[in-house]
Image (cartoon, rainbow, N blue to C red; front, top):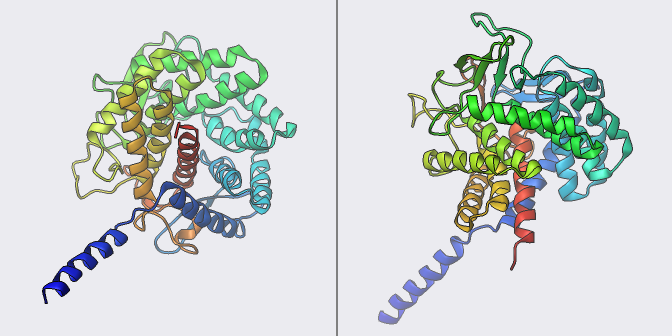
Length: 399
């Protein structure tokens, strides 16, 4: 009996150790990209020649967009990432087809979203293929985006429209930081320093006017176009004007990390690290933020997978850019935590489900009751981007 007892204990320990084996990140990445490839190939089958995917609702309703929707570049961008990882020529053909749908946007100068639309699609296309046909749309769209910059305000205007009940004269949202990547990338490709100068000026002004002492960011700052003074600081998609809307904080972390990567200016690294420290102190245990850090419904409120995916991509980048080894480790650890949670059954869709999107549980705009707890193309895009960055970062680290 005694021998049996010892054997039973030993066996239970062995079985527990076997059951607790944690999936490696390469295994996780393979699994996610297998899902992504299957989902996005199927998604393409239902798209009209001039449409792109937007979201999917629990009642089975699929919402597609025209090319002018601000997120239209994310689906082709994700296809390029899937091709980058898998080398699947079928995916490459789908990526090219859906990228070329956006060609008319190179002439669009009505908002700041050209960076999202053109850099994610045409930018990744050129990066991965070197095909010169992608260059002219990139250069033209960057020049048109730069024309939205005013030397009086020191920033690129986000929107030309004014929402009902708002008194905007020159609205600028933190999301604009993401579109500076198109200016930086095009500035390097075409040797155009004026594009990079606009990006730097915008980033500097935003750093002065968008951030609170604790390094959370306002969503929108409205400027006077006549003299450049700040008229108001408010939110559009957050819980309140003074709250920390989660995706806005993600845009800020990503934006200043990207600006340091392109410019090498230490002020941007310092800003990114300060934002990172704020996030590390406020993120939940699983790494997925509630849609707004200051919602009055926490812990019973919705989380936003899109914000987590953007943060994860930025945290990986920042881990390779920081000068401090202790920061490097904790940034990469948070990115891994977020990626593992997003790759779990709770967030990662099964093949054939979720309207063929990859991630579940994102929040578009809670105040507008729009895109609530649904999949969104930009969540998928930054999730795949973060996984690719994580792989490259770990592959290049000393063994």
